[in-house]
Amino acid sequence: MPYAVTLMAKQAVNSFAQVDGLLAEWKRIGTNSLSQDLKEKMNRSIGLSVDSRAISSDPDAQCLLAILAKLPSGTNLDHLKWWAKRVDRVTSAIGTLNNTALITQRQEEDSSPMFYVLPVVQSYLHEQPLYNSPTTRRLVLQACCAFLQDHKSEPGDPDFKAHVKELDIEKTNIQTILHSLKPESLLELGLVESVTNVFDAMLTFGWYQFWTRPSTETLDHILRLAPSSNIGEEKALRYTAEAHICLGRVYIRLAQCEESYDALEKARREFLKLGTPSDRIRAGHAALYLSDAWCYRQRPGSEVEGIVREAQEDLKDDPRGTARALMYLGEALWYRRRFDDALQTLQRAKEASEKCGCRVEIVECLLYMTRSYALKGALEDCLKTGKELLQAARSSGANELISDALVGLSRCYIRMKRYDDALVTLKESLSLHDKLGYPILVAVDLELSGYAYAKKGDRLGATIAYETAKKRYGDMEETKQTEKGSRDCEENLRKLEKGDMELNAPYLYDE
Image (cartoon, rainbow, N blue to C red; front, side, top):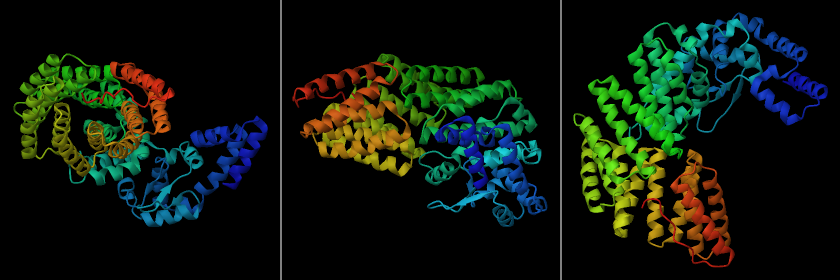
């Protein structure tokens, strides 16, 4: 590495580049950031280690180096059992690579040692046939798929929290491997079974991202790859439909409503076209999620209830689907402001979900029960159910459900004029929504915080919260909700500027 620093300094002198620009290029493309002459010198330096007798006489070290070069964020010792199954003597190979300075080691908190290859060495190895062969790429991809399938779970499953923790360690590696796939990469795999394993793994990663930090990238990649894969038209359409259903839910979380119901309508059509009993059930689930998107876009309540009842017909032979449809019917009745009917329906849905062991649906039932009690004015029932909701959400391990619970509880505290409790809850909610990348909920949390600060007599805190909320609303797609939020913030800021602390009461976004 001292030699690398010398070469980078020479590059800076020759190109008049700034240090931060050179470092950014180095991190992004390794030795390719150097001029041709300097790159050759660096590569010769690395080659002395790669071609040394210690490496060339140790096939296990060569194999492990090739694998680690494909993992940009490195991996820990525990996970090498996945990535390096073909390496017979892992500890010996690690020792050889450490002695030749081809890998670096760091100790992470609550984790076994991490091993990684520096970007400059990765860049060099990617140009060496021995370390970038189709066989190596195939082995790494297969290991990636196996890892994902072994860590596939959903909130409420006993292993969900542990699986998320393990996937968090590898998410950058997985994303790099999956997103680099092209149609020809799939053809290299040969067997249809291997290709379907890849699509199954990509869907697993897409749902993991939905439950942790929603992103559309992996799902969009499935939509690009599936039509040109060699798995047959029916399988390709099914993977496309599954990607659309997850994509639709991601878009809701990202406050991109138009894109959400476009994706969910496509998913429903695709599953209905496939036509098997299991596809009909998936079409029913797509319809339920579509009802959510319609609520966000404030479609007429009769239409929302109508599509839920259509979904009930699709799901009548599936116990879990039946329980979920009943929960969504309760949501539709809440949306139509039929709160007593909603509460009765949601209680039935909760009982049905408990029989099926459907913990996600139990949390969602409690969420809409909390909202229904709030709008009925039954605030003590609202608070009691809201606390039960938060406890159930935390036990599920899913940040997305914890987010919903915090939203419900903070609004309850504001209605009860318990502003200190509201601010404590909103602080946690804001931090989580920012971490998850939920722009609309970040803006709403800030707006409600502004109101709570004002009610406590904190004019400065209220002003800062409202100004930040107004900016966040302005940065998003314009909808009735973002337009109203921005307008309300602006009006309350004018009042604060005049010293008027009697602000317009906030719209609590569960009304």
